[in-house]
Length: 404
Image (tube, rainbow, N blue to C red; front, top):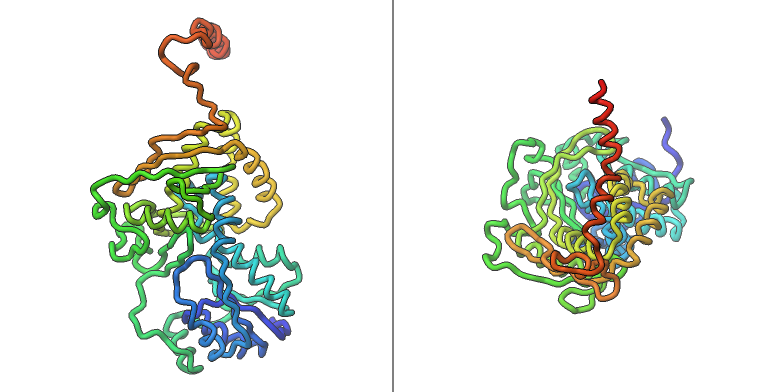
């Protein structure tokens, strides 16, 4: 199949070996102008040298975009209002970053008049789906170049040979035996040694957290204030969403919180082993649940919780900008209007646990009703009729069984 004619493309560029090769490959294979674009979503990687490296490899321009606050405010926090956890374990750290990265890439493509975008996601992973679904949302006519689905550079040796042939600097440090992806919400590890699901990860692999065994012997207590389901302060200090995540990551990492070792089901059909560190997100979800417990109606909570697997799957599979996710977000945000209060969380050796919750404005907890002591608002004798009515269908079934 002949290649489409491309005059200008925007490449999601990290400055690493793969995307450096892709930059040169696009120029060689498509004869097009390539604009490099790097998104800072809190990966804590050095971005200062990327523009020079991109231009030395052939890029006509290089955009470095600071998306950290937008990432926390418009992507992480809405997702955490839903308590979205994929397959009950994965906090969707990589999944939730991709739609934002793609969104800004498409904005740059429109601004620069590019007909195409390109990315370094492989043909086996979830990221290709996430990037491209988002891209088509913003421009249904965009052309997408995914080199891993086209080229024959199918080994690291082939990549290095291509890099050396075209004068692309190759890191001389020993490659880690796994791939990792980091942002403000988490860091993930996949591949290499982790492809054996029986093998325990090496301790020196972890980046954001100490081993729980090495965490402080004294627990630490923090108080997180929520307004309409969003964390707005820690220990009484007002913070932006980005500042909340930075602070909670530091605290969680210090106490060895947020490690997960998962064998997950990818959208493309295979099972894949991933090891994750999500220290701040783990604390945030626990605290959010604590405030919900005291402020959210029982049936509203039950309905919302029944939708969590659907919502989490939408995010995992790349449907952030799909109408069903947006509709569901509207419902979820409505449930959060009364989620206002404070959760006190205990951090200790890999665990975080809510040990106190309060709300001055929206508490549904009435101690006069809940007390085991004498009260004047609840007639305990009423419970007999309540139980008999709820037992009616069970009694009828038993009577039928007796007749049989």
